[in-house]
Amino acid sequence: MKKTFSVLLAFFAFFLFIGCSKSVIFDEKITFPDANWAFENKVITFKAPLEASEKPYTIILELELLGTPNVDKFNTAFMIYTPKGARMDKLLLFNFEQPQEPYIQGKATNEKIYRLTVFPKKYFSETGDYTMVLHQLSHNADNYPIRSLRIYIERVKE
View 1 (tube, rainbow, N blue to C red):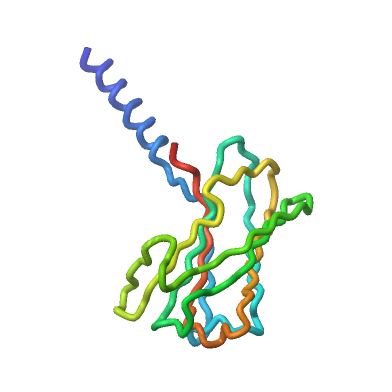
View 2: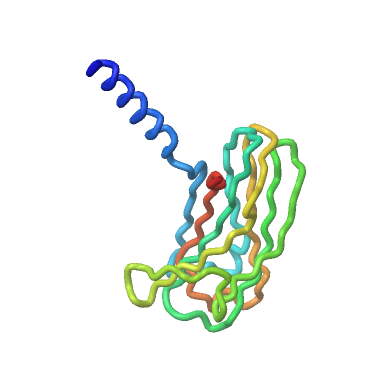
């Protein structure tokens, strides 16, 4: 009886470990020199090797600011290219005055991380390298104190 209980407990622990496995399938961060996403480098590209899945994923962007931005809003375009070359576009707006989601306080008092959910439920029907491009549309971007840009993709919690 003790042996059966121990085996069941081991299986339970194993399945609990599998069920709680990491839900983030892609995570990449780019840090800009001098905390400045300069306008001459306005296009940022990420390559995400993804597996086809029938389950949805969430795509999230984070802008880490060092200091206070001199504007209320930051406009960008987000493009996804599938491994076969199909393209999907979405215009994004980071609203610093009234953020869509509460900002995250950074390590220092002047660091703030603004998070934006780009796609709450995105399906990837092809296996291969997806190219994700973020293109800043603001003409005055050199004045933004953007320290870094992070993109991550995680499984939708059901």
